[in-house]
Image (tube, rainbow, N blue to C red; front, side, top):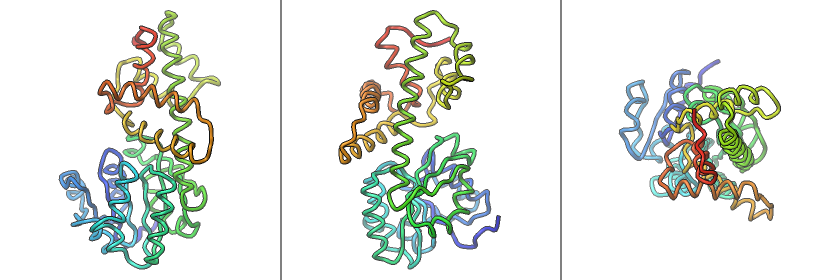
Length: 299
C-alpha cells in the first residue's frame, strides 16, 4: 500500500478512537490528533502524532479529518461549533465521521461542509474495542463514491469489511440496521443462557453444541463464554448501545416502522442503566434476564 504524504486529522481518542488512530500510525500515516481531554493523546504523541490546538486547527493542517465521537450533539459541536472543523476546513477536504449518529444530522453536516467546497463521509463501524485494536472493524460508508474511493486506503488501515452503502446518511442507516441485529441477538443469547441455567444444563457444553449450528452468532461464540464466566468488561458499553438504540427508535418513528423487539431490548438495557451498570459490556444484558427469572447463568 502506498501511504499518502497528506497529514491525517483524528478527533476523538476514546475507547474506539485511540486504537483506530494507533493503527493509522502503524500503517505509516502522519497524524494530527485532538481530544477534549488532552492527556488521552499522550500515547499517540509518543508514537509521533502531532497535537492539534482545536478541531479548527486540525482541519487547517489536514485534508482528511476523521472524527470518532459519542453522539450527534458531539459531532455537531466538533464540526460546526466554535473553533470547529468547519472554521478551518480546506477546499476539497473530506471529513470522515466514524461515530454512530443520526442519519438526519449526518446529511445536515454534509450540506454545511458542501457550502465550503468540502464533503462528509459517514463511516460508522462495528466490531467493538477488540476490532478497533486489531484493525478488523466492519466499516459502512455513506457519501459520494469518488470520496469513498479516495479514502479507501485509510479505511483499510482500520478495518477489514469495508462497504460503500450509498449516499450521505446511508452509512449511519446501515449501522442502525446493524444495531437492531446486534441488540436482538444479544438478547436472544442472554435469554437462552438463563433458560439453559434454570434447566440445569452445562453452560459451556451448551454454547459449544449450539455455537456450531443454525443458532450460532458472534455474540454467542464471543460474548457467551465471557457472560457465563462473569466477565462483563466492555468491548462495547451498555450506555453506548442504549444511545444507538435511541437513534434506531427515533429513526423508526420518523419512518413509521414498527420495531417491537428492539424497543423491548432497549427497555431491558434501561433497567441496567438504572442500576448504574452503563459502563459494563453489552453481555451484561443477561443480568436483566437473571433478575426476571431469579437464576444466574454462570459456571
